[in-house]
Length: 427
Picture 1 (cartoon, rainbow, N blue to C red):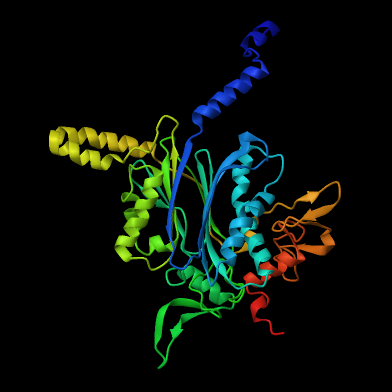
Picture 2: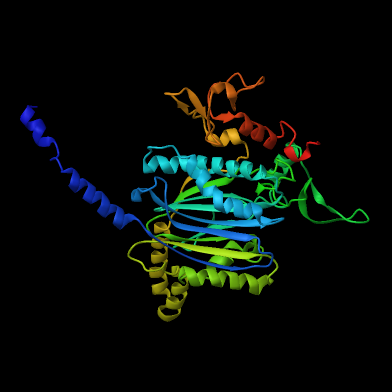
């Protein structure tokens, strides 16, 4: 093949400005709208929420924009909920490496969420206060949704096919056998409240402290086997979009996921959030703080999410009969296929080493290691890899990451029951 023929096969060069213009136009077309609403009624005044639709993981760079929606359901006071609301996002972003692409940002986000949750817990416990909080923390970047959660607040996804998916895991000891086993293996005791006469009442709790949850931020008086390590799930929606309902247990103790989704379908997010709260109150009354965020991820050519085709199908069936039923079934199947959700990542292990990966960030210029949790650079002699120790597996390499400073290593060992938890140490 001659040089002339080879040159003819090459695509023509495109000016950089043209490429940038195309990218911007595609970004504008493809990126969905995010619309939201919130509603809340207080019983104890311990629920807090965070709405930040205009975040950037590289400050000043609009192309790195994303949205955050979170609920913090406090207990034994409000300090932990307020502290997590004010500090968690910054701690997550501090664990994001610099100079990465959007694809890499989404890949490292689950690990950064784990580091941010643990760092927030360490910082709050250093304050010496005893309150705690559940956290359901949702990051939306285009069509990708990443949810990190500890406790029993919940996030559900309602897609256009009418399929409701749970994006969180409840960390209630009563309902989660795996968490009960982990807590007892780490040194905690699980049992019900004993009353006079030896009778046991109420839900399963962890002792000391009597907490019904196995994971939270705070709760210094309970024991560090109650861990802040979140369950993380990351999914990618189809371009049909979807609706997220994020709510505290005041909603979920009254409504199932399906009931909450059905109560507000086809309505704008602001009205939908109020209807979910109203439905919960109608079902159970105001027995707890009741907080709900509804977030719609909407294609640019739709002002609101369209209702699912199920109700329309029933109406048309009554008018046009069997022939229309077949047609509507085809339409429903088509919409359901469009609404398929792709699962990108899910992990719920409470073992910190399993959640932080094997990267060992070494600053080649200074020779310093960076702690995977607190993000502080220290000499290798001042900290340890999670693989190090007198009894590490022959298959592991103690010089491999993740690297933890001495303080975060103590936290890791306490969570795994390898050393006494701070609250049980006698002075």
